[in-house]
Image 1 (cartoon, rainbow, N blue to C red):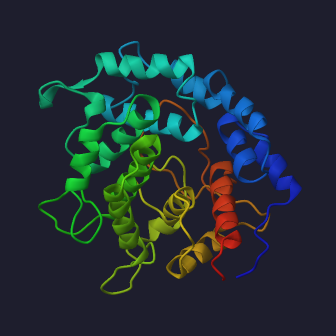
Image 2 (cartoon, rainbow, N blue to C red):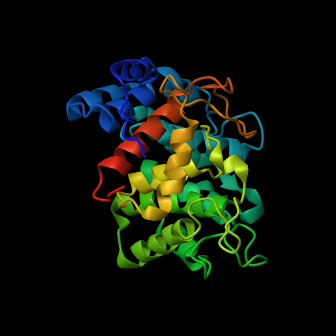
Length: 310
């Protein structure tokens, strides 16, 4: 592997010439800016750019319009979390309190939205939203842990299917990590995450365990928002965020990330998923993507500066 992943100053300037939700992450993950400067930049998300725009489109009744209310709301909340909206900001408190007061799943006996529904891919996302913006939902976490399949992952089609899904597994993994960081770290939770991580690693993040074939070539193409969809950059960014040590079984996926880089040192937007949120960020497929470039660069930085020897 070549070790020329490090961004040039021009790349950093391009990344910083963006939305506050991206800028603070560039400062934290690529430039090692002082904590006070990072916090100041992050505080702007609630009042400027994509974060403020998405917050402004929330209904007073708590949901976001434009489609199936519960899913549009969920995808919008995940984007706000990924942007880094400060949970302590008054805008975030208003946003989550509207949801807590008004949103319920009527077919589930008016179950509160933040208590989750039936599918683990959705419940994992809701677990993370509650842990980030409200409070950790221990009952929902226990439900997810009880639904872990023997091979280590999760599947929204279980129990009809006894095999895990890459899509469902990455959703639950990311969100158990958020729950853990909200003060719920435990040996049981760590073991569950490690089993699920091994599910992905044993398949080299994109291959069939039985045949070694690529499960889905779309997983080798990158986008944001990912919504419920799996891809190898999303998986690698999870391992980076979890503070995992690089593993030799990741190396092929890392090579794919490098191969996706254009000659100008930027990563393109390879595709867009059909799920809707009432906000446009990067929409031109094949054009340079700041989201993909940020995530790829921080994954490569983590992978090549850790104790694992390439």
